Length: 341
Picture 1 (cartoon, one colour):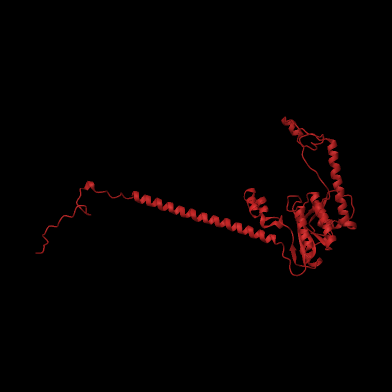
Picture 2: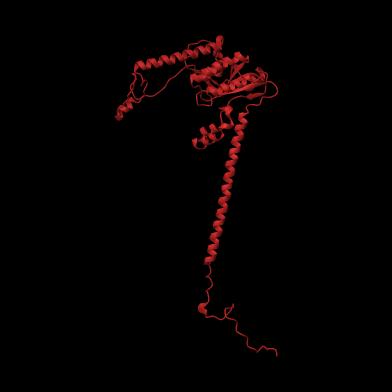
């Protein structure tokens, strides 16, 4: 016997979906606009994972960037350590004298002399050109370079030319005087053959402010030229005698290098400087001409090879960007370029 449509349906089993329960015991649906706790936790976990992935990507990026920087610096030091590659034929050797001439500067005697020796020793170099753009500096450093140029000229028999760009003054001219010829631009500044020793005196300001100088010395002249003490005429006379003697040494070097080309006038060694045209008239320079002109027309070797020693790249970074990063690179990379130290 088959049931008919009038047969009453059996009640659903207890615990099944759709079972009849009192309305009070059913869980209320989450209100609109207020996500459930599970949804909130899921979103927080998703955001956390996304942030972690982003941090990991940035961490990888920075590691690769630092590795790329390290490789670039190491490669640059390797290229520098190989020195200039001379062409197959004859060429003009270039050594730069740029900036202040001082012990710790790029234009120190050690740096310039290293470049000069490499240039003179290269058999393909037909002549050595000093390209100068310097206001001068230490007479000791300039004297070392000057004497080495004269020694290398006598040893190798190669001519030396100085090409002045912007400025060739004081200690820079001390170096240029060792060249066989000096070329300038008509607007170059040349000269300043003199010596100075400068300082300050604060005694008047100290008196006004009620400041008392308390200086203890062992040796009556140990506080010589102390800026916080009154001038001592005997000390001033001693210092003046020192710089006068250095000035005479400077004059002797210029006379030795320039010879009869100098037009001896009272102002020539007074510390004045002149433009290129005036320097030629006074015999401080020979003619106008650029580096390319000298290589092409005087040396007859248009290929120019730079023998200037630039120093260790890591040490230059230390000076430029500060001790923190630069010194770390210097320690890590110093062994890669021993020839540059």
